[in-house]
Amino acid sequence: MFLILLSSALTYVICWFGYTFLLHSYRDVDPLVLYHQSSVANTRKEGETAVYRSVDTPHGIDLVTGLRISWKYKLRDGNLKDIWKLGINHNSKITFGQEEYSIDSLTKTMQALSNYIESSQFSCIGVDLSQYEWFIIILTGLCSLRDFTLHFHEDLIETYTSTEPKVIFTSFAYLDRVLKSDFDTIVLVDSPPCPLVIDSRVATFSSLNLINENAEEYEYTFDLKDDTRNLLVQHSQGDAFTYNQRCFVSSISALLQSLPTEHEWSTKDRLLTTFTNDITFNLNSLVKIFGALVTGINVRILPPQKLISELDNSSILNIPDNLLYQLMPKRNSFLVSRSRWLFSKGVFNKIAELPSFRPLRLIYTSVLEPPSVSSPFSSTYNYVQTITGARIINERLYEHIVGPIVKTNLFDYRITGGFVDRKHTFPRKLGVSANNGELILRDYQDYSADQKEGKLSVRVFNVGIKDIDEFRKNDYWTHTDIVGKFGSDGVLYEDIATH
Image (cartoon, rainbow, N blue to C red; front, side):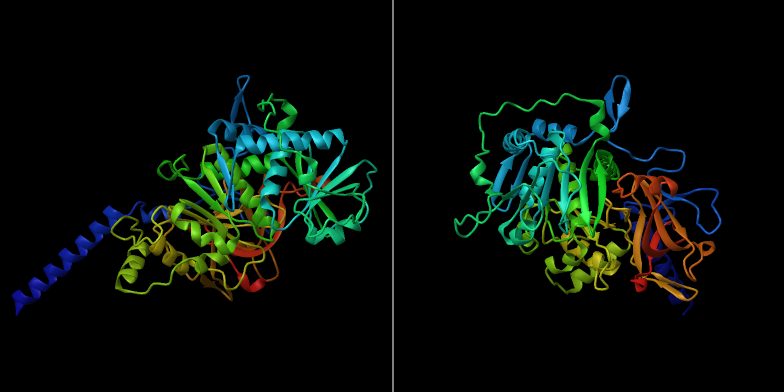
């Protein structure tokens, strides 16, 4: 009996040590790393937590502000003109639906369009579109090539204070409300169903004859003012939010620099993204698309309902988080359960994968504002990783900010339902600050900053500014309605019950 017990004990010890050794060997990150994901300041103000940053940009190191382009023995942030030129050099291609365009051909169209705008002396360029993302790309690129400022309209403002000529690009579906505005010229991106003359101000995009295959090759001559020039103005509920070049280049650089070397974007990748009726997500999609131009990646843009048809041909996917589970095939078997268990222990390799979409390696999901109660939690992400074999980076977006304010760690495999702290529940793991920003929590109702909980404020380079004086008065902090708690691991957890 003694020998049997001894044999059983030895077998148990051997199996336990073997299990521990195998897990440690196959994990691509030590679990201790996941419990120290933020750099925390040593001091804090009354009613606030200490300032939290990502460990990628710890305190004492500059936050990511831009592309860091060498210029006259200095480094500058860069602008979208630099990025567009990189796209031309890479001969990048963007596919809208089934139509593929090279950056060079898009540039020729934009040059012709800019000549039309300049000859008409338009001072204000507006866009009021829903399903014409190809044209939003053209207009954004146009404003990156020439010194124009693009105006996005959610609710058309009846009267502008400016009396200078203005043009707006829209679709026929929105024509009635655009006719009530005071734009001097209205250009329809699509063609009206009948050739009726509705208003003398109305023209169609095709009638402008902007295709110019003989246009000169685009050459960019740098001007120091280009890096600080305003690029977009978003009109929303009577307010105007201004985005400068740094809003975009800081987010693009933070996106690309947040990945370890073995997971960086490369020319072998292919980006699949979409546009929705949420402008915050669409601005984040622009960040991904311009990031693709920097790295020489080809891009395909599809409506949400058609994304699944291209998953087999894409290595990087960018979607809203509420679409994630809908795109995945439903599988339930012993192998799936086994893979989910291995993934939950941090084992990301061929042994654990059961990929239905083998090329897919990175998935960016965006939590929109406000988040949906049905949005995926970490257990769902674990299932998607099992099915795809892809790493998932979940990004928390916020209105009037370009790109994420908080993102999850590429290596964070932990499944968590959040936790209960005193009388509050924090079920959603948001992650850590993006590399171009920092976070604090402030006292809010019965949420106490002393307990590392409260309402979130962010200080980032990618925020649209409504009132610059008020922005400076707040020491450049932007206050949100996100309520959360910093865990001992430095990760921000959100209390979605407050929404």
